[in-house]
Length: 504
Image (tube, rainbow, N blue to C red; front, side, top):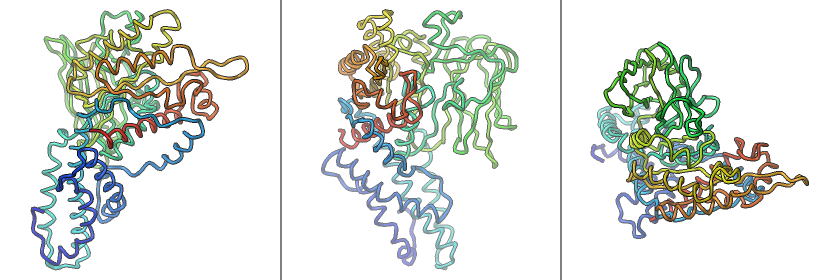
């Protein structure tokens, strides 16, 4: 430690040493087995230290950095066995090397912060109980200064994942479980990016909106949107103000510290104003000579009681907002889930390229997960596209993303099963789902991406029927229900965690 504590104090602090040593073993010793061995050592130490961390927090107010183990995991394991789902490893996990390295750096940062939390908690207990007259608050103040130094620049120690998909994740099904698991291990950076029109009751944050018109990428791709070439960024949706003082209201959580508004600045665009409950957060000009994706970072970390709602107001006609990222301003992981209803590879490859690239760069993900396929199989069934055209659209989307964020790793999340009901009340896999799985496997290999076979994880052909009978899927024979999303997220998070532990 950089601060000196007297001998009697050291004696009283012996309780935290074993946990601290376990937590920091690979930070002070050269682990002989490489990255995989170091990760396993940290993982084992973290699991042993969970209870100790919880006890330390009881000695003083602490903001939870990493969550407890998911109590639903054993239930989901049993459910997976019931529907004959299986563990499927991520193919070519070496393609995730850069992402895993970022997780290593984040893990080490959090370990150092937690080590200081141990010491501070015990010091606070000694001071509070008056057990040691030699201890004074200067020791605590110095420790807090050390802690604040580690906290500074937390944004630089945030690891971000962009999960881009279709209606399967539109309500944050699947992705909410993956986010929860990763943040329990690597700390929470916040909810992350939420599309501007995603309702709070469907996994988003929007409560109400008045005076805004919604544009969707799927409508633009089909010609249903009459506006010429609207910009969608990577959100797939943009809301545009249609009158003066148009208002959109979003829900705030107690952990939110920043709300980052992603908007399109363009000539003659009106000013935006923002309020957290009744507190004026300021104004943002959006009128620029060139069209560009911009961000507006709002501090919603206000004196108690914490605000419950964020209001964004347009002072005129023509303001365009893609979405808002809700962040904790803490070192941790952000998992952005963007699911455009009806989207397929053609939609993502045909949206405005400039805004798509600008938005992707501004999010700056370390990992991009692309999850499409079900609607692509539908397009083949309906004769709207050939398998070659689906492959070309998927390849174009991957290349767009890699061009925009070249340092990000890439993973393709394969399509899940979908079903047709036969006259004898049995269920079979819809045609072209397995073929699209193969197309995505081939393109992942060719384009340098990892791949996770969700179809195989569900149990392969005919698995949708078993999941439906277990109450996990919708009767539309395409989409998961809440429980089905949780199970899919559980299977993917486990595969990603295993790849991290065993990876290079």
